[in-house]
View (cartoon, helix red, strand yellow):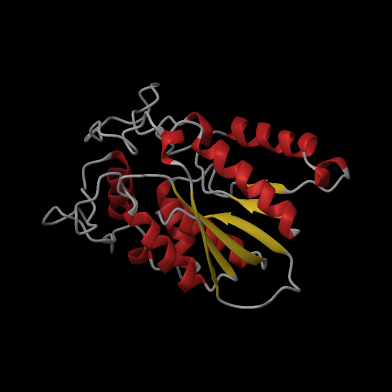
Length: 242
């Protein structure tokens, strides 16, 4: 099922597809794409993720950003089995990042599938750009968040699409690739992004509050702490670090 939320009609502007999960990184990427002046088509996927609270966060962020369209796409959850984010295995807490191992929260081929969908949509809509919020600094060991992956996917687009064959391939942008979480938040705040709208937790409670202990929460909380700010997202823990 595809749910399409359209806010405005500005079809004369060039279009860009933005992959929007509702988390901190993707929301910042959306605001960076907006600052570039494109007509924005935000795309959010529902794929059986246990942190589906992000989907509602994506709705809020897309509305606040004034995107032209927001597509919510349902994918068959069976494709993404084998991850702590889509199955019954526990989300690890207090994991040490950068251990060299791929964490259990890795979702099989997720970014490959998402980008492939975005490429098809871009060609169908005449969009010139795709934005994705992957990051190689605080990337937690996911192989599909590295520069090599984005570069390889760009080659695939050039070789495997009509637009690429005709010499005008859709361009993939990963503007957060080499930024720290602190730098990402600074960029978003400068663009007017309200991070209270976003959700990043891998294991939220029934009320949608972040756990504060998963790797995503810890990276986020530490970045706000370094900035001397309190994370405006709700947490189940009584007093998240400031």
